[in-house]
Image 1 (cartoon, helix red, strand yellow):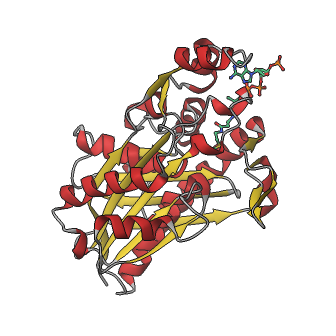
Image 2: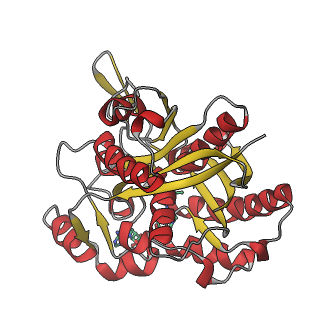
Length: 324
Ligand code: ACO
């Protein structure tokens, strides 16, 4: 049975960088008080990238995908499956994956979206690996892409300072060499209310609340505990020790969550990839963006073992162990 190996990656962030100070000024104009100090101390976030009006998730996804395809040395026509993780699709339908398929000219690819909020990329990567292992696909483009700025209530300072927009992508290919060596996914729908955008459109009218709402402290506890347990389980499944992990690439929600998690697992901070300071929380895009940064700056080398972890609304969480 072939392995599924990451042979290329790409990331794309919209060019508009908004620092905490910039955001504080913008929010002050609406009568909302925040500060660089509050955001930095509570979250580790220094800045975020935000799209201009009208830029959609597919636009970011296409750019990240083109970079990933070039990195992999493949043409769009070599891809036989596109899996795109997002909670901010361009439309109700078609899927954003289909829009990306058309834009890339990936005419041989099936395409669908995965909705697991901030765990979306880990879910999508596991799905791609499963297709490859089953012999149903050879080259899978796995994307995490979000325009979270579109579902934020910019009058709610407890959430709007936390997120950014962006996209990350990997090319996962059938290989005789080890690639994905373990995967572990979970969900607990009874926790749906601690993080949700509980609205929809029906009969042309917005029904419910279309903005992201969160119980920050409940999310914090859930994220640390669930990711710690998931890390142990995926290592046990793969027959490796936590000490064997070269790089931990957790969902980039909050530096305090990342630090707590690293300490709980006994993984030294020098082995943890952090991008939340520059990207903020880009939901499904955060893990592939962080992976791409650490591959391109030379930290992640072929043969290294990387632990990718996602956690988010649903509640959903999970881990993928990858031999790079
Ligand atoms: N600027 C200034 N003050 C603020 C801001 C802000 N942006 N937001 C909230 N405050 C105030 C509150 O109004 C409150 O004031 P009060 O004491 O006068 O009532 C005070 O700060 C403390 O508010 P808390 O909500 O208790 O702040 P907390 O210390 O819990 O930090 C945070 C909030 C950062 C959200 C924290 O709970 C957290 O890190 N949670 C994890 C959740 C997370 O990172 N989610 C990301 C999305 S989920 C995911 O991706 C898995």
